[in-house]
Amino acid sequence: MSWHRSSGFCAVAIVVLALLTATPALGQVAGIDRDLLSGTGGSHPGNADFGSGFHGNGIPGPYSITWSFTPSAGVVQVTARVQGTLYLDQLGSGCVRLLVDFQDFDFNNLARRTVQFCGPGFDANNSANQRAVDISSANIANFPDSQLRHVQLTIGSGSSAGSVENDRTGIHTVPRVDANDIINNGTTDVGGAGPIGHAFGSPVNRYSASIALLESGVVRSNVNGILFWDSTGAGTACLLIDFQDSSGTILSTAPPVIARGSKGGNALQAANQQAFNHTFSNASGFKIRMRVGTAAGPGLTPCSALTSAVTKTYSLGPAVGSGVGSPFEASVQVGEKTSYSVQWDVPEPESWHSLESLEVRLVDVDGDDEDEVLHFRFDEASNSFSRFHPRLGRFGLPVHPGSHARFESRDVALLLHGTEVIGSGPTGPSVTLDLALRFKPESAGRTFVVEMKAADDSGNVQGWDQVGRITVHRAHHGHR
Image 1 (cartoon, one colour):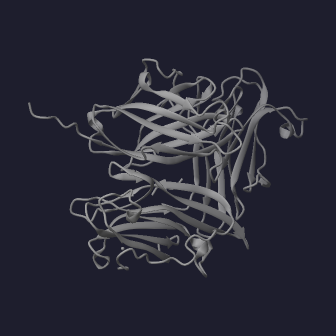
Image 2: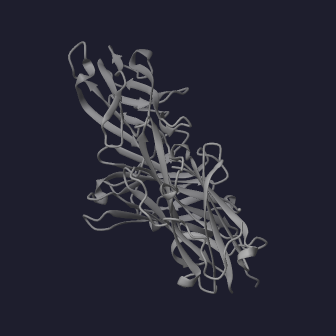
Image 3: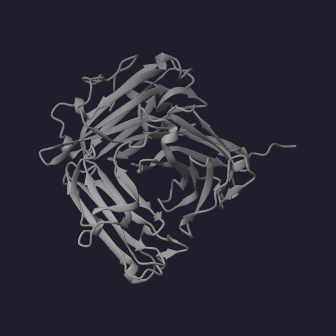
């Protein structure tokens, strides 16, 4: 949801954090960020890593930042909790440091907490070379919760406590929802504006749904697009939009969006379309629920009842679960077949079969959200994959893992023959997509963020969430 230097004490000292492991204030989880800070090596002091779990091949797994929202006195009180492990990763003794800066909208520091220690080195999995980190803004006295918008993490290392120099910095921003989707529901469709709004029975462009915490302390929810009546016969399409709090209680309902297809025919005809743009701002805002279907109510209130309705719900927080890549940070060579796994866990008591779909995309880390190099979807019911074609605005035909199909882009190919779907049993909570990737010469020297988007059978949608990174290097050829 959010996609991103002071000396201390020596020996095994930590700059102690008051109430380091105390329980943070209660609030509704609005998002969980995962990332990894790994020392650069080379000319920089690259011997500090911040992540979690086993430290292998020079890097650990990801750390996490859990964001929570609590409405109070008309504004959102924000809590950020940083959890992970700080590692000393060098051949010999040394000291490492983590700076945790809680910042406001303009990146001004509201508070800083520091973790620093010195260790013997040589083995990052030795407990003497690790310090657990669990820091919450909720444990800082007189902290201005309503102003918190960013968390900046900085790692550094040195030969002694007094020589520690900063190395890598990561910025995390308070979570938000920015969804762009299509609802293709037979005769009642929802999409977005564009040169061609509807073709081959489906919207071409995507509508927008967003949920964002403003600087003023309220949450602004917005949804905009076009409702289509898509039938050769007459009828009425209805779209109902509810703005909800974290428990699903309706805070406000927008006026019904109605497309009266009095004669039917081409969905591109103005009579079969209705544009909409609805916004609601409130400190308790957390979800947007959209219900689209055919009007079945009486004349003056046609949208009071719907038939053939589908529901989409966009929510802050891990509404559908959480994903992670394995390894979180991968380094691969051009041309080699690479196995990269992404795992998704659903909340209890559901099983992974409650998922409708998982989408995975690779995005150039130096680009923006539009710089997708590959985007595909896994459909749980049919156990199939389909590739998204950005020019057409739609997914292609489904193919099954193990087939000889390939999803090709200029930079990378997904090889379905070597791709597997591994569930955690009939009632298990997780599913793993073991992806067979082959990166092309055009991808050399670039890093790609791996992101996931999930939807469940109840219409809840989550993502895009960052779950990993893949850095591609040129192939090394030995001498003959």
